[in-house]
Image 1 (cartoon, rainbow, N blue to C red):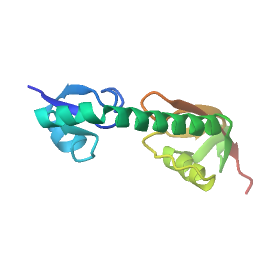
Image 2 (image 1 turned 45 degrees about the vertical axis):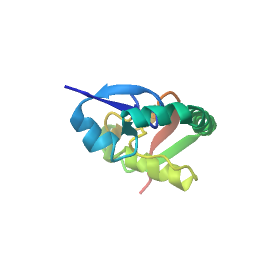
Image 3 (image 1 turned 30 degrees about the vertical axis):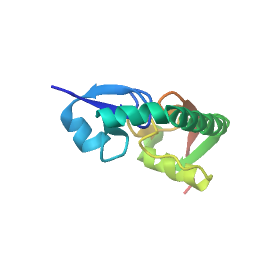
Length: 151
């Protein structure tokens, strides 16, 4: 069983803003509708969608342009994390998506930890490159170093 919703913003792996999609009732009720990501697909909302389609397309284009500008900044950045190391260059602790988001915040960029595609915390020294999903179709690659810290 599924219900029809109209997406108000692009949702990764689901669709773009303005599309009508079928989703599980719980997903719509518990996530999409409360977050304002979608509205139920009633005949009134469908008519309003057709009326507002141009506005939605302009907003999506602006969001995409902003995301591409941010992606350009992120692609040109290189961060450095200093961590204490033990034997065989193993870190005491790790570098997590929270650490990356905090350092980006210091640099003046507001990136959510959910946007940082880090499979597991980094626990060794070296150079890394991770994807950051800014919108459903704009992804930046952030480069950073994890270096040993002198006591």
